[in-house]
Length: 187
Image (cartoon, rainbow, N blue to C red; front, side, top):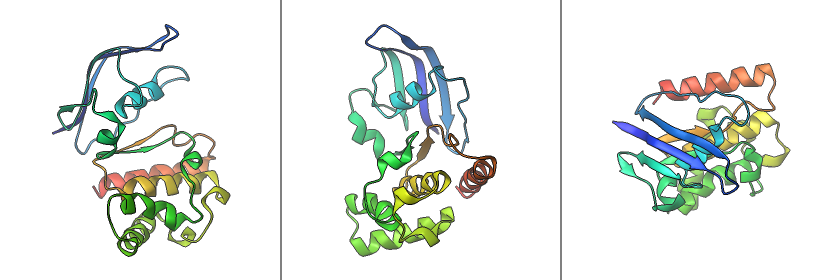
């Protein structure tokens, strides 16, 4: 089954700059995909179109075989976990555990059930030892892992990471790559 499909998608910014032109691709369940290109090549624009933060000028984007045009950000967020380029900007709570439990609480879980789920995800991501830490005081690599845990706690069908290795050194980049490979292999 296709998780995501672009069919002849183009996007032009209000200032007239065309960022995407007739983009078509499909991502099937179980695939592990990387968008690679130089700065300004449209990678983030593609991701923002997926998340319904931007709407294509032309073409159609489908998520789980359903067109997303006009359905809003919340429709996409039910199935897609999005980790922004600067994930620390997504964080506003006093502890890592509270950050990871926040989404499940918003989905209707009790605080206790959400914290249990958050602890499980933190363990899976390899940062359970950071549960009581203040997120914004962590290293760039640790913040990236917290953001991934936040996304995972919502049990999305698809996780998108925008520039996941920017600002990280070689060892942190390898650790993140290994984590993503493990997550992919475990489903």
